[in-house]
Image (cartoon, rainbow, N blue to C red; front, side, top):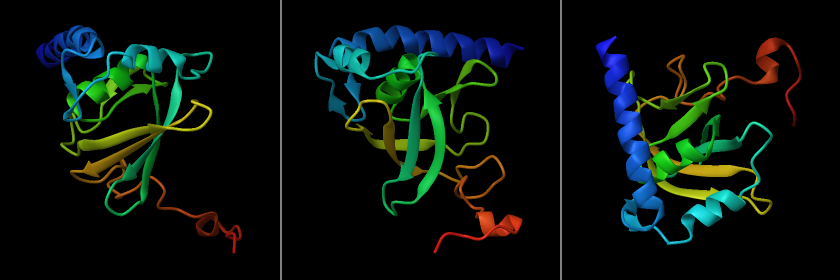
Length: 151
């Protein structure tokens, strides 16, 4: 229980720091945030739940590691801390990748697509991305289930 309260207060502290970071007073992923970052985040095309799909890619190999979802708060925390934060659709709460496993993802850059409705988060992973222990969540093919794979 103490750990959960500590984690909650840590998230609240980071969210408070985010307000300063968005105004350009803090750094994000090692560089000064532009003053219009809040405007840029607001202009993204969020779905009806306030989420964007975030493709996480190994910055060195180009391998796709996972697909997760971010809300504005998790995106802000990601930019502020330099590590990935997501929104859990099933638990309906923020989660910091690697908080329990130690397999954090150090953010190199965050890109958004031409429509502003998807993110590409390029990272240096400290360990496997998948909860199964696999390096990537995309370790299976349809052929593994008896279906033909695309040529």
